[in-house]
Length: 400
Image 1 (cartoon, rainbow, N blue to C red):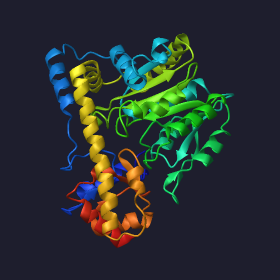
Image 2 (spheres, rainbow, N blue to C red):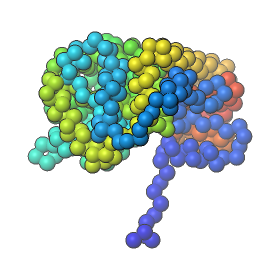
Image 3 (cartoon, one colour):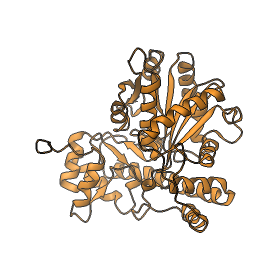
Image 4 (cartoon, rainbow, N blue to C red):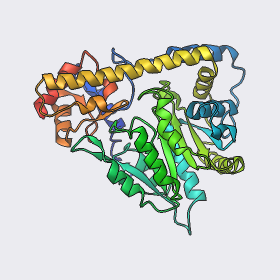
């Protein structure tokens, strides 16, 4: 049966990391995969995470299975982080959260749930994603049996949000469909709506019978833990329905622990629990129940005031370094005489920047300079350091 199988093409992002690992050039630079790096080019373990792990190691008494939806304490901690402890959604019990293996699994479980419970006459709802968006979004939802369409988001001519076109498209989304929004630090563009624009997006979707699905993978890496939830709070109005897919890979540095969550917000507590019951059936037929360690770390940090304070400080350090690299990149591009105005890089938020580099320029950067960038021109700003920024800018100057 296997003899006729041809190899699948490499993943457009993870495949680049594999190519980077095998590249013998000692000056190679990897700006492709979305992993935070410090000034030395390392992906560190946060101090708050290490302290939490030490506590867990001393107190752990079992390796037994977790419930299908994970520990209730983890769900409660995630909800408080998203909404704030005193939010109406929590007080009314309108949110129900399941622990998933990373944000990607949260998206897939959401897709499975939507296909199972919200198909109409056998036709599943369409998920509307931004153009552009994370390369894996369409893959995940299509694998779950959903159709995917796009709405305008980014204007490469101005390196800014195509807000009017976006809003016009969202106003035409049919009732019963799903609109995927990035909570903050839009991947790949780094361009987010303003607070006022979020309010207009929420107004647009509120009366249409459209379900917002928020991919919330970078909380804390744009402006602050609380400010980065401002757009989500606009969507989260009394009586609203929505789905939030959280990830703690970036803001906790828990990449290989695969820690995420799916949170469904319904009009009532009864409805939220009903949704959770069907989410659990989707989980049971997929990975059965979630891993324990990463979620225990997140719960321990968020529930301990001292660890929480230290974690927030570490997130700020990551955020400040990323923004410092944005400013440095824009300055050095200008100093190296690279044609164009790159000040837009300093206005973007989060780990990623839509650089404007063409596919051909990206190819030449890889082949001639061992600089690895995603084909779309998206760069991971966190992969830039003071040690490699000059070589990077000189190489860009040579291909632009």
